[in-house]
Length: 460
Ligand SMILES: *[C@@H]1O[C@H](CO)[C@@H](O)[C@H](O)[C@H]1NC(C)=O
Ligand SMILES: *[C@@H]1O[C@H](CO)[C@@H](O)[C@H](O)[C@H]1NC(C)=O
Ligand SMILES: *[C@@H]1O[C@H](CO)[C@@H](O)[C@H](O)[C@H]1NC(C)=O
Ligand SMILES: *[C@@H]1O[C@H](CO)[C@@H](O)[C@H](O)[C@H]1NC(C)=O
Ligand SMILES: *[C@@H]1O[C@H](CO)[C@@H](O)[C@H](O)[C@H]1NC(C)=O
Ligand SMILES: *[C@@H]1O[C@H](CO)[C@@H](O)[C@H](O)[C@H]1NC(C)=O
Ligand SMILES: *[C@@H]1O[C@H](CO)[C@@H](O)[C@H](O)[C@H]1NC(C)=O
Ligand SMILES: *[C@@H]1O[C@H](CO)[C@@H](O)[C@H](O)[C@H]1NC(C)=O
Ligand SMILES: *[C@@H]1O[C@H](CO)[C@@H](O)[C@H](O)[C@H]1NC(C)=O
Ligand SMILES: *[C@@H]1O[C@H](CO)[C@@H](O)[C@H](O)[C@H]1NC(C)=O
Ligand SMILES: *[C@@H]1O[C@H](CO)[C@@H](O)[C@H](O)[C@H]1NC(C)=O
Ligand SMILES: *[C@@H]1O[C@H](CO)[C@@H](O)[C@H](O)[C@H]1NC(C)=O
Image (cartoon, rainbow, N blue to C red; front, side, top):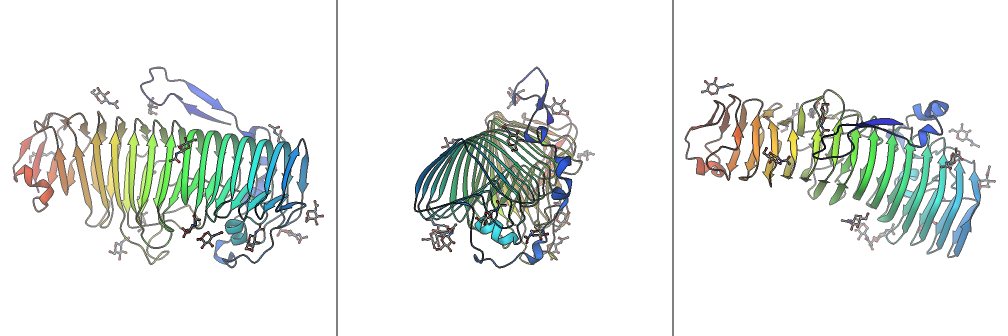
């Protein structure tokens, strides 16, 4: 259970508060405190090829079956309850699945789904409808692996305790379509939805998701997180970790109301070398960011684009809207790591396109990172730009329907404004300085301009 404020993302004059109920109201996480406190040591996590057999008492190999109104269980380490493999097709409806038993290899669980309650692999299709899945000791609820493996799930209640127990987990290019989901996980590194090496393709709609553990996002992105109508609360994680290390990734949040409690609202990175092709979309979505130092968007060691459309970001606690940094995160998922942790680090390049949105907070770039901010279609931004440390590249572009209300002096490498009267800038006495050496600023002719509210736009 948790509380959110004003469920209506935009233009709501009635600010109410809502209590959201999730599976932890039925099975209190305090009953599984030891499971949830367990942190898997990722430094010794095992080999990255499959060295464990995926097994379970309900095992379907090249079969077509239907399971209805059953209770399926298993309580053994490294064992699934239901395994669907080698091109099988299985329908499961009105069924309860319960699993306990530990994972002995983090990598085997993450990359191949060892110990997941439900494992669908090698070109199989699994249809879950009205299914209740509970796991303890560290086991994913539902896992799919393989290029043509797919799961369609609807009306799902999923609960887990213990580490690395994601709700819906896709890897090896596996695909999940889920709708009407209630999910809770109490452990560390247990996202409600998760994609893993090389990619997971996740499409989820109508979701209530609550995670409590460190590293447990609402969606961990490698591949696609396509999230619609999600009400989510990640108490000790961003709502999304977007890891672009393996190739292009797309994270979409539409019609959602999501709250993050650690690191950032959305954390965009590469866990190895810098990579290009990271896309994030917030569409008609409210992102709430708790914590005094958390930015709404954070990018490190990645070349990323974010589109913010008809959305509201309300992060008054930190006053920071976006950060681009020479940094990454480790699999501890609880701090911004430097070169000591990842010697392939590069500065981030984050471009944000804003449309029909009202945003507030500062933009901060560190150590040669680049942060490019474009406001269009009646967007309003209240904020300033800042350099964290070192030389950094900050750019702001405004169309003539958008506005910028300054909260501090801002130094820009690039600045452009389609409103040549500059009346869309409310300076509050603060100044914007621009880099005369940047060709993007040539239209400003190295001149100084008066801004409304007493400040100036002038060359630096
Ligand atoms: C779990 O499944 C394994 C493998 O299929 C089986 O050998 C074992 O008896 C089952 N154990 C329990 C406790 O369900
Ligand atoms: C299952 O794993 C737990 C935790 O690692 C361990 O304590 C237990 O001995 C294992 N059980 C068996 C039968 O190996
Ligand atoms: C999928 O196929 C691979 C390669 O043949 C095999 O190693 C693996 O055990 C299979 N997985 C399952 C769950 O059957
Ligand atoms: C799902 O199963 C768990 C454990 O078996 C139970 O506590 C819970 O009430 C069930 N949820 C629903 C919605 O039936
Ligand atoms: C997926 O397809 C690619 C390309 O054909 C292949 O290299 C890879 O082994 C396949 N992966 C799985 C998990 O089946
Ligand atoms: C699976 O992913 C790998 C790595 O991204 C890619 O090379 C391969 O073509 C993919 N296969 C399919 C069938 O999508
Ligand atoms: C995202 O999922 C919705 C259904 O939930 C679907 O209509 C839409 O096409 C998907 N978008 C992408 C880009 O896959
Ligand atoms: C943003 O946060 C402030 C302070 O917490 C609150 O008064 C306001 O209603 C919020 N706005 C939206 C759109 O949620
Ligand atoms: C920026 O990155 C450095 C490591 O390179 C890290 O120590 C610092 O905490 C990061 N700050 C933010 C706000 O990202
Ligand atoms: C931005 O401010 C203008 C002028 O006050 C207003 O008309 C417009 O609706 C605002 N845009 C948003 C997305 O709230
Ligand atoms: C800043 O970037 C340089 C590489 O350009 C790196 O050597 C240095 O450690 C970074 N500083 C911090 C504080 O991250
Ligand atoms: C803005 O620039 C003017 C002119 O250089 C200066 O007098 C003023 O103090 C500056 N304002 C701030 C807030 O630094």
